[in-house]
Length: 425
Image (cartoon, rainbow, N blue to C red; front, top):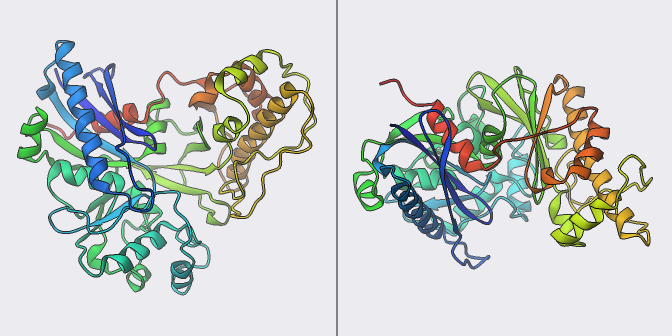
């Protein structure tokens, strides 16, 4: 028996999943993130939460009659753009900055002096800008710039200085050239930039001390990871060209497999490399977090049951929790549009459903306008995918009925990545 372990560091906590050699899910575990000072996030607490989750997972496996030492492969996903600086011993020498941190205008101005006119690293919420801010605060004590998944992978292997094509993309790495562009050295010390590997590439064995502490085999292979949204895609859908996944969580993310790379950072559209294909997509700030501002889960279910999705409301909403949008419009000042509000809560909620569905359809339309094929199949993941009325409304805008994914947890996708990338014996 060989098992694969996927580790997902999400926004609300850490989740792990274990797949057997046939790809069946046999065990899951989760652990909450430890309390953090939002202005001084400690990356070590990420590692503590991961350790706690792995310990819970190994206990689950033993209770189910499995030996945790049968885990042969591990992969980690983390939130895209979250990062920290560490010393050579992997001790953080800076606070961590998260994927949604903003306010890097001075760094954006420096990047604009060197980056191509249209580039993913531009803008005041740039991941590269975060790296520059951390470097200005660390005072020259850093040895490694590590994305969130990189940091956990480094803790597992005992080696820093490595990343993957997906996590490094927003920091400026060029996955087509498989190198850091020369201009990045003008804003970040090149020696701090990680060596970037193909997603799923073997990174080495578990550190012997870590393996002993966690009850795992020291021969377990750790693979180069990915981002949380890409891991969620891998959990949901087969790797077939034209297959797409819409994730309907707190925000909305759309991704589709394409034979060609399609990028348009001006509207928040970009491609991640997955082997010989590209995962094209972007993320909107619309989604469940907007709905939760107005209704709780029980209210949404009750109101949905009273809707007639075949009769549009005529409301032209652009549901956002606060000003700012990423894709299909890249505008940090875009204002929410949720008026006029009808007296009926049923119509108000249906109007928001329709607005989110229009945004989803616009995302795929923008991909097609730039050379992508129309999606052959769209799988749905996240809480919003569970609502059949919302699915009816989405189907009317998409021109096809979205399919419910059997699995949607990013940890499952990370485990699939580790399993599929297993090095030949």
